[in-house]
Amino acid sequence: MPEPAGTVLAFDYGEKRIGVAVGESLLKSAHPLTVIHAHANDERFAAIAALIDEWRPVRLVVGMPTTADGAPHALAARCTRFGNRLHGRFGLPVAFADERLSSADAAAQLRAAGRDARSAKAHLDAVAAQLILQTHFDSEPEETHVHATPT
Image 1 (tube, rainbow, N blue to C red):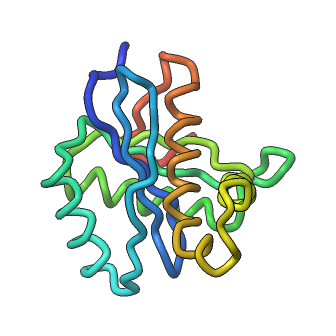
Image 2 (spheres, helix red, strand yellow; image 1 turned 45 degrees about the vertical axis):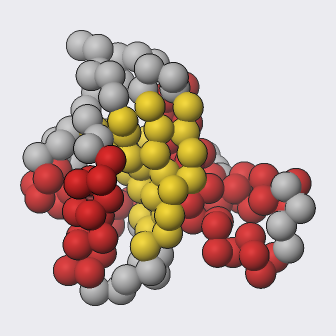
């Protein structure tokens, strides 16, 4: 089943920060948007609600961490729970995309763009979310929307 066309928000979930990217599914192009620094869940979801109200996405994408060999990362269960909460709170389809090496790739991109380590750190999570969203766009068109725990 083809995915609906429109705006997509992607999240690079972390315990301290959540990187956010935005993209348009027809253009298959992703862009870094912001980093949510709130630690309390209520604050995090309030910030996400504001982004959803502003961007009106047709779906959400959450990065799913895996190890280099493709095995689930220790943070995978938290990312799954985060995705399930997004779906439950906002009623939007949620897909999970492989985020293997997204942070390392984001750091390399920022260095290549001439950012020093200090200024790069402020943008790292949003650029990682951009790479997650681009991975999602570049994946097979039949990617399944996940409304519960991925299998």
